[in-house]
Length: 115
Image (cartoon, rainbow, N blue to C red; front, side, top):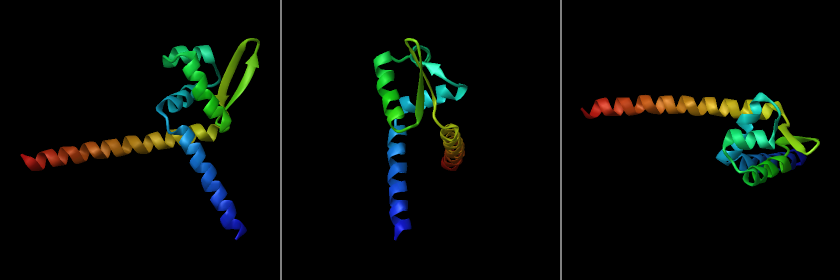
């Protein structure tokens, strides 16, 4: 019984993290952090986002423990809190690319069958 409760809580937490990640901008932010810690200014410029918008997305990621911060003077630097999160995103992108490639093959086969 205790294991079921623990599993249920873990699945609920997993779902919450996935909800936080279910936004293309947040995925772009994490992708930008693959190369290490970055300031808000640098990320805003590289991602083409307004600082206010970027800060809102970073707040969601920070609340879920996906990113961590460090303050240096007036600048706040963000980094991925756990490199396994970056690895999980990378694996998922690989799966999606494989699916797209397979889908392309399927479209080619369908096109040949109609001729």
